Image 1: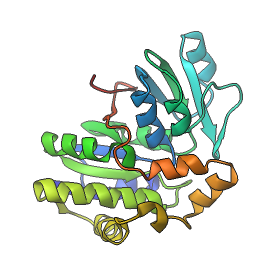
Image 2 (image 1 turned 120 degrees about the horizontal axis):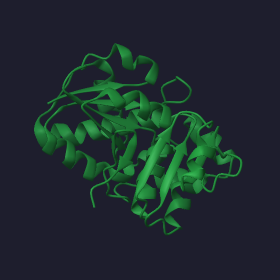
Image 3 (image 1 turned 90 degrees about the vertical axis):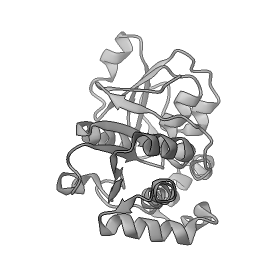
Length: 237
């Protein structure tokens, strides 16, 4: 197994692993953590969208709307991008139309992979087990923030790489993967504290989302593996 880490969606087109691979889309703060939380709360399907324009049409089709821009919930959407909010609700049977600043854009960019999953600390162990079982080469695609790399996504990429190296003797194929792995080895004792001065954490704290930030660094709180296929996210139940 080979592992490549891409630190920004802007770099995805230049990746080395382009055929017969699995891509893991990552946006720890907060889209992929929220996706895991929504499925943990019972959601049936999630349709990721890269713009707000289609949302009214999805409402007419019976979807609940979940939308965020720059950290805040958008307009009359029922939900935003908060994993702790999703976990306070019973979403059994819900279909969500979901659009965020970074995470859903990244997920849609990764749709050309043979298999596409979403990853976060919330589903780290379940995801690593699935990837090890699948046995494919892996591209970990970090959302970053508006094209720039970010600390928390890079750290998660390192955590996932470490798990896969331990499970399968996987090898890294680029410097970003080696950097992420080294970063995780430095931070693994307390990843939340390690990232405490990250720019997006400061941004979310100013918006009153400190509980979401803390939750996003807890391991295995939502042990589901969302898979993106045919425009829809689902999990095996």
